[in-house]
Image (tube, rainbow, N blue to C red; front, side, top):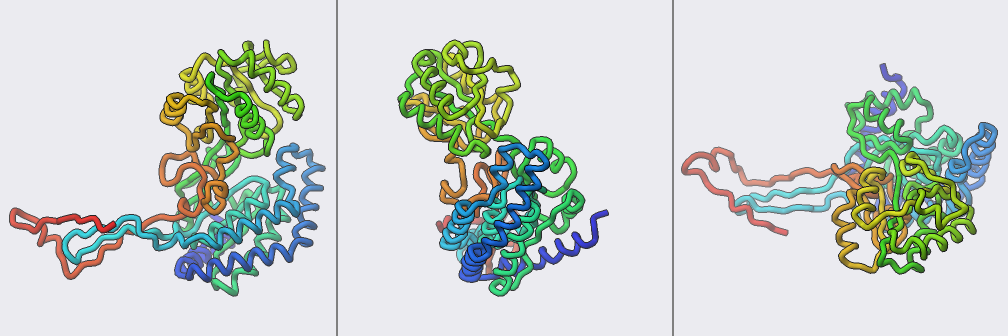
Length: 430
């Protein structure tokens, strides 16, 4: 039986989501600006609570990759504020007409966007993610339940309080709820009557646990095993820049590259350069037998290394014989998140784009571009590897659903039925 306090809080969100969906775009955007100002003025409190979280996490021996995500520095706060302000300036996602069709003269059908309702978001130790998600929920008119990693409990609690206090006078809606315990998570998994969508971000085992213990639709991805394939026709200078950025720019991110596949004809010329560059940047390499010949500082790779999301300055490297083997490797070992090819051959690009079954497929650029903000989506709640509803970075559009709106003049189905019934003319109006 779900905890009664959690149930009542989520019920309140359901009512609040209806009010928020009716709020004007101007009101929701004003709330975002108010939240940005409140976070800016609340830096001292945020830093103090974040310091406590970090000290506790260090004492508990948390991995360095999670510590990096946990830190909410001034630079990250500045970025979060900028993201909120840019989100506020985006067009209103509510009420967009996606289809418009006249069934008969004066009998018009429209497919129009509306908020999903109440979304539960369970994510890792990233306070900046909480700000992004809350901002997207506000702009899209959705209420949101937020459960961050236990490592960031105090930081997240402070942020939820700041966000709620700043927005309430403007939108007058109970739209955001922070929960903290595993018991609370278990409680919300049973609330399919009040929660419309769950977006979990965490380990494969955790995402599977969520899917197995709820009737609420689940959207998200478990792993980010992203690959970069350097094809035989690649510009090797370009390939080196892309490989480095994909691995070292932010190795703890789910869109950082974990596997590098090198076409055999260029292995002898490219791998020594890659080994030197990775060595200069402290990257530990697990190389297969063929790659080891050119990467003497690497350690031998096992099969498990090509199924591993390292989330650190560590990666796996393999030599493949052509694009078909590279695509097959990605299909067998990847997680359908983000995969890239580096090539100057147009046919290779087309084949890679059409054959790799991932949410994001890139050519001649870093895998780190797989991001809602960089895509112009107004930040993201996560990256979905699902093929239903939303795929890739899930921004404002991914938080919308649709309604069919049909406006008539007393039409009845009987008029359009039978041998002598009227015919629809289905005229497209957009």
